[in-house]
Amino acid sequence: MTHESYLSAWQQSQELAESMQPLIGKLYRNQGIETCVYGRPLLNASTIDILKAHRVVRRHEGHVLSVEQSFPVLKAISELELAPATVDLGKLTVHYWATHNDESGLADFLQTELAPALAEGTSSQVSDVVLYGFGRIGRLLARLMIERAGNGNGLRLRAIVVRGSSDDLEKRASLLRRDSVHGPFNGSIEIDKENNAIIANGTYIQIIYANSPEEIDYTQYGINNALVVDNTGKWRDEAGLGLHLKAKGAAKVLLTAPGKGDIKNIVFGVNDDMILPEDRIMSAASCTTNAITPVLKAVHDAYGVKNGHVETVHSYTNDQNLIDNYHKGDRRGRSAALNMVLTSTGAASAVAKALPELKGKLTGNSIRVPTPNVSMAVINLNLNKATTVEELNDYLRQVALDSPLHNQIDFSTSSELVSTDMVGSRFAGIVDSLATIVDGDRAVLYVWYDNEFGYSCQVVRVMQKMAGINLMDLPAL
Image (cartoon, rainbow, N blue to C red; front, top):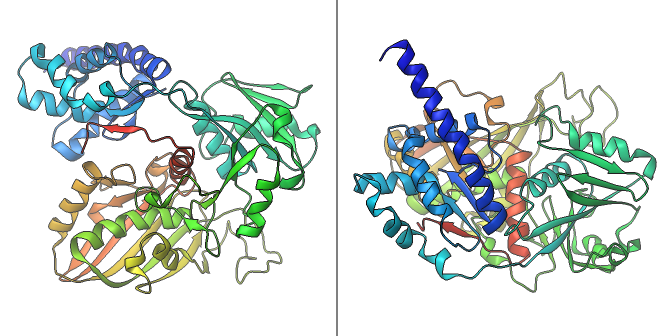
């Protein structure tokens, strides 16, 4: 190809990607259909992001998926009447063109592959959500809910509860608008000072100032049977979290931290079948537990885990001091920005709450490092049977592509991967396949995770299930 032909081909692909954007938007707004390419979301994606998502297919199929192939499939999907679902355009396209030479059989193919969504009726069920606390996780949950506002989403962000007074409304809005790690908010944010509210991309969010959960009357803001998501970590047992249920208009509580006592700790994709309609208080466990448990389940299912150790190399958090100062925890009083800080983690033992088969088999520790986001788990395992690097990686690649854990586990083959490359990842964990070590029945896996955004995506999945929202995932595995 000549220089001009490369440029011409790129521009043609860009033009098709631009043509895909309105179809993707209308599918979501009108029918609640979220489209993705091998797990990479296309909703609100730029043309370049759409093209990059197509290139990810090479990792699994050995070749790049072209928009010339996927565009007619997307166009045909947009002409169908579907119930709310997540539709992987990439998988449909690869499957179709592997068995067809032209578009003549596309309609029949989609009728078969998308049959469950064609048979289901549309649902208008909407659940009110209140974010109690507006720190790192609270703001990312707000972003995720705002970007998914629309028909079929089922979760409606109605209010955010913070301490303080209405004098800080502009500052609260500014923290949502700008983020040093995750970048600017994708859209428009306004404030309504008179009514203490933030309007983000048309979503009206009431800001409620309160010092304790039970003193709030959500019903006075038109909020009823709300799911309250506690991002403060202040209360982690049933008695403390139960205070939320004393507030008028609150129906259920989800904690974005490990729960204590008999509270169910949910890692979506692993034990979300434990979520029952009558459950009123739940925990979404920790970011590290969410990152390692899906990978551990996958490995245990195929090879069996005798025992192991998990070492997390974790970005610093707000719990640590910027400069040396008193801290009740060991070592955490030393400057987070200047030191690697050895500390404890309960994530390894917490795995057993989601995966009881591994109870007592894992130990764990953590090293906090001077980075603001993205962490890594080094999982050292003794297996029940021997394997090889190639066999284990091939298995994990397949799990990431075609298994019930495909939304939790991502798989990388890049030799140049570093932590900032994972900022914004929507997966619970990313297996760094080139770092995998296997020696007979001993294996070491390196799993990256965006301990803020990837975890928040897991939290949203738990929220949806608690609200009774079960979106179909198509094509079916």
